[in-house]
Length: 277
Image (cartoon, rainbow, N blue to C red; front, side, top):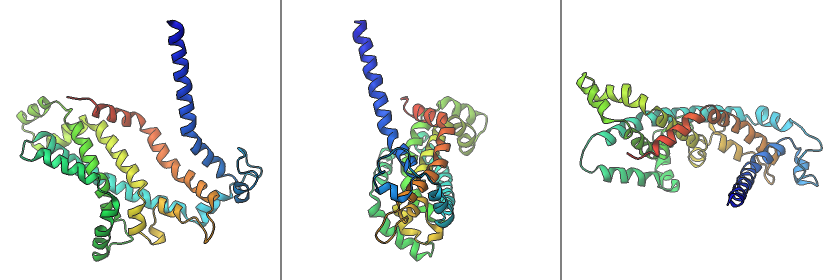
C-alpha cells in the first residue's frame, strides 16, 4: 500500500514538473530569442539555446527607434483609467445588486453576464461610429471602450464578494446612523478589499492586453498601445522576430512585477469569491 502511494506521489510530481516546463518554455524561448541577431533566428542556429553572437541591439532598437516605451506609457494610462472607472462603477452596481431587493434582479444579472459574452466584432462598429461622431479617436477616451469589455465581468465578480460580507455589520452601521453610501465605502469596501483588488488586477490586465479596440480606435502612432505597437514591428515582406521578442520582454516586465508584488491579494480575492454562503 505504501509503495503504491509513494509511486502515485512520484507520478504526480513528474506530471507537475512536466506541466511547468511546458508552460514556462515559451517565455524562456522568447527571452533567449530576444538576444539573438535576426540572422541566427532563421539560420542554422535557430534552435540553439545560447546565441553565437548575443546582442542587446534588439532592445536598443525597440526602445530608441521604435518607441516601445511610449506605447507602454499609453497602455499604463488607458489601463489605469479603465481600472479606476471599473472598480468605482462595479462596486456601486454590485452593492445594489447584492444588498437591495428589487424585481428583475436575476434578469439583470443574466443581462450583465450576457453582455460580457458579446463578441468584440459586434461591438466595434457602433463604438467606432460613436467615437468618430464625438471626435475622440486617437485619445485616452478609448478607456470608455475598454470598460465595455471589463465592466460586466467585474460587476459579476464583485457581487459574489459583497455577498460574503455579513449583513449584521450593515445593520449595526445603520443603527449608528450611517447612510448606504457610507456603508459601502467605509464598511463593505474595506472588508471586500481582497475581491476588489483581484477584480482591479484582472481589469487592468484585460485592458493592457486589449488589441482590437486599440487597433481600430487609436491608429495614430503616438497613441498606439503595446499590443498594437508590437504588431507593427514588421517590414513589407519580413517580420522582425528579434525585435518582437525584445519588445515582448520589455512589455512583460511591468505586468509581471505587478502580479508578483500583489499575488497574495489576488489569490485571497479569488479564494474568498469561491466561498459559498
